[in-house]
Amino acid sequence: MELGLAPFRRLGGRAIRAAWRTASRWASIGPDDSAGRRFGRMGPGSCIVFPATALMNERYIHIGAATMIGPHCTLSAGMAPGQECITDPVVRIGDRCLIGRGSGIVGHLSITIGDDVWTGHHVYITDQNHGYEDRSVPISRQTMPERAVVIGDGSWLGHGTVVLPGAHIGRHVVVGANSVVTGVLPDDCVAVGSPARVVRRYVDRQGWQRVEPSGAD
Image (tube, rainbow, N blue to C red; front, side):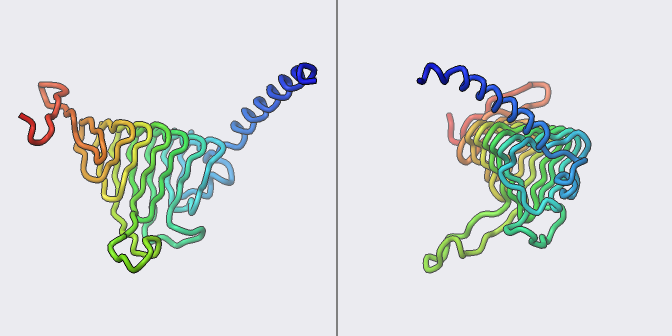
């Protein structure tokens, strides 16, 4: 019986894959369809690849030109659908960016991503964290401080990178896979770890130089 079904399974598999490819093309969100027009801005040639995991309060999200947001991504402004945000835009993504599959960009105050920024898969960027200081109140009910996040032009965030509130990543910065960025990373550097620290920097007339850890001989 199983052998007799094999040809039908192969045909069915090919049909399902073809249907998924067609759905991915037709259901991706671009600047000229109704879903794209919900955004505060979506530049020409940009798209959000199908399927998106979650899109919320798109009017506060601006996307530049020729930018691609990979499948299964989350783009969110605020905490609830229909929320009136105090800044506009809350999330700004520049031109020619590539946001990897399964990533999440969740803004409440200000997240600014420059031009030509690329990320690996499953990168998470947020400008809000949870307070935990009062032990008598559940963490979910404590204040959620917000601090602006900036990612400079031409930077690359490796797979699994987490960018936390107050992070400021300069231009032409490489952030290694699974790093956690909590502070300032200067222009033209390579940073790794949790929290991310600079391990290489570009020095004029010397090129890329290794940075020794603090306290090293």
